Image (cartoon, helix red, strand yellow):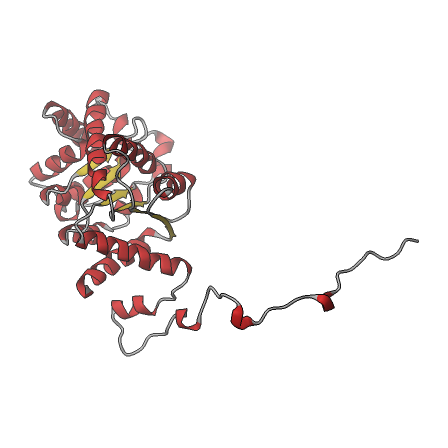
Amino acid sequence: MSDAPREADLSKIRTIPISGRANKVRAEDFSRPPGKDRSFHAFLDAMPDVLVARDFRNVVAAIASAARAERGVVLMLGGHIVKTGLAPVLIDLMRRGVITHLAMNGSAAIHDYEMARFGGTSEDVAAGLRDGSFGMAEETGRGLNEAFVKGMAEERGMGESVARAIAADGTAAHPELSVILNAWRMDIPVTVHAALGAEIIHQHPAANGAAIGDTSHRDFRRLAASLETLDQGGVALNCGSAVIMPEVFLKALTIARNLNEGAPRNFVTVDLDMQRHYRPRVSVVQRPTIDSGKGYEITGHHEIMVPMLCWAVADALDVG
C-alpha cells in the first residue's frame, strides 16, 4: 500500500496583523434603526454605506449634480414604469428641471396614452390571446396611428404627435398623469422609439408603417442630438427597458460622438430594472463609460425603487 497523501503543514503558515489589513466594511458604514427623526432624509442617511446602497447614493448625487450644473439628464422608460403608477414622481422631476429629455419605447407610450385618455391600461394578455382580441382596442389603435399620420404630415416626432393628440382630446380622463403630455408642455424633448410589429397598435387596421417609421426615426435623431448634453457630468438612466432603449441609446450615442469628435464623455449611466439583463448591462452601463464616466446597475421592483430615487433626488436638491 502506498504512503498517505501529503498534507499542507499549517504550522508554517505566515499570518498578518489585522491592523494592517484593508477592510471593505467599517462599523460607521452600518445602517441605523429609526430614531426621533422619521423624515425621508433621515431614512436615506440611515441606510448602510455598502454595495448597492452606496451605488444608490452615488446615483442620486450624480443626478442632483447634473441638475445643478445644467447638464443633461436623459430618462429612458420601458412600459412597466408607466403602468405601475410612477408618472407623478417622474413629472415632479420634470417640474424641478431635473429631466432634460424623456425617451421611451412604444409600449410605454401606449400605456401613457391609454391612462391619459381612458383612465386605465394593461389588459389580460393571456385571456385576449385565446380568441385573438389581445391588443385590439379600437380607440387606442386608431387614435395613436392617426396621430402618427398627422405627425408625419406636419414633420413632427412620434412623442410630440402623441402629446398633441392627448392635448386635443377634451374628454381625456387623466391628462395630468401623462408623462408624454407633461414633458411636451414643459418644452422637454419627448421621444418614442417604436419596434415595428412589437406593439399592439401595429395590429390595427389604421396602422401606417411609413408614419410609424417617419415619426419614430425623427425622434431617434432628436435623441441623438440631446445626448450631446451628457458631456462632462450628465446622467443617462434606463428604467425598465430590457432591449429597445439600450440598443437605441447605443446607436444614438454613436451618432452624437461621431458628430462631436468623441463627445459626450465623462457622464454617468444607470440601469434600473427588476432583474439584470445582458443588453442594458453592456449597452448602457459598460460600453458607453468604458473610457470615462461610471455605470451603475440597481436592481429592484420599479414601484419601490423609482419613487425612492425620485424622492432622494428631490431631497438632495432641497438640502443643497
